[in-house]
Image 1 (cartoon, rainbow, N blue to C red):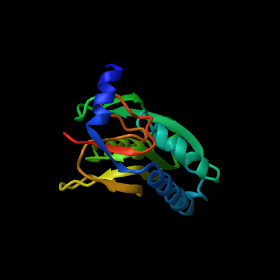
Image 2: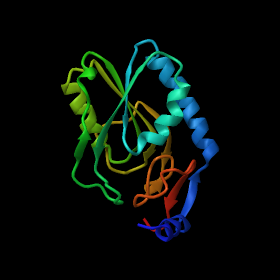
Image 3: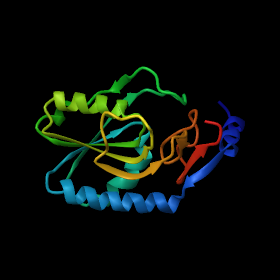
Image 4: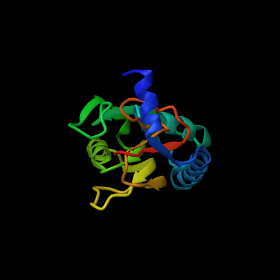
Length: 181
């Protein structure tokens, strides 16, 4: 990995969601989340590392009492196609008897979020909810739909706002899509 590879990826992509549209979507999501769970003292779990940027943008807009932690379940490991799931940090016992809202960058095929949901509910959560910055439009059915979603993106490899392209560009404020994927 090097700077030239990162710049080449950027050149072979196009912006599909502006930074302003991302901010507006997060504002709308914050209001919807507040209305749905603001009185429940929810536990919010951020899925590292992709949701780090989205979480950092969303949390300051949630002006109600909540508890925050993170989990880490990965399938991609800097690749553009998912592989075997690997728990790096599993949910803590604090999910028991709680409303749990899981934050992630994207709901693609839904397998990662479904695995997280199943684990959290098996640990005794009273309610599982998910919030994703974006959901990929796919023709096949998914094991779940997000409760809160900023916007839909096309069935292309997207990056920015925490999502990476081969390990690069998580730091972008807008969302881009690879032209060749």
